[in-house]
Image (cartoon, rainbow, N blue to C red; front, side, top):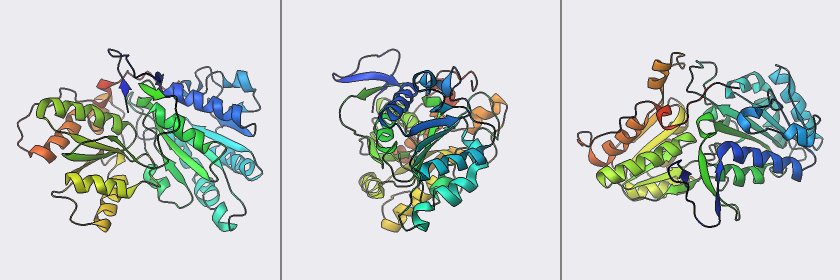
Length: 364
């Protein structure tokens, strides 16, 4: 996986540079073009900025019958989408903040997730629900939650957290019009403006987990933007301390490749888990549970976990910066695992997660 920085625009032959938002727009366009029964609905999808650029211009290309805004009635509109899915259409619903999907939980958890099971496979509810996780401008506790563990808890839902443009292109083409059940995709706002190198070849990112970087000294299991944070940290500790980090992008929160994770931890004996949500009853705890169920002797020392502080997100920017794990903390976690807590190696000056990303200027 290659994150392309402004100072280095060189990519391998056969690849191109594509932003995360650009990959989303391409995936949405391809989904509508390739599947006449597909449509996109959500608050702001036909706005001139099109959900941070991920649906821009699609209403002009495909018309208001296939790309349309919705009222502030998430449960009702999700019910309409479910009904459309049951009669053969393919709805793509978009929530510009993941928190807004909480208003549609009855429809998602009690209906969409269960139709295939309740009717013995004779009925299915194929749909894509896009949830945007955002932060970095003081949006507070009601617009900053990352609910992947909640959705992954319920059988019948597939939950993914694409971390790169390649993941978007590869997985969305497997999902739209093809996946037989509801898929929840959680997209991190900090990724939208990042550029990645993508390949024009066959799909390479599975609907499961994969090794984003090979290493021998410590395993980092990460989700979403924390994969990029881990890659940055891995480069830092390699240069400063010769530490080789293996990074696994969990990618599918509901259907991970646990054997892949176990094999990596068996090799390194050390583990850092970096998630975008709270640690309590979350993805990090499930990673540990799965490893202990397979082999309690895999770890040579207790794992380190990175996630949001156990509180609602503060609105004040200065406090928000302390709320999320920073590059400083990510590097410290890796070095403490490999070199011990008194390692004496200098840490990055970066203390806010957003210092490494383009500043976010608001939701629209």
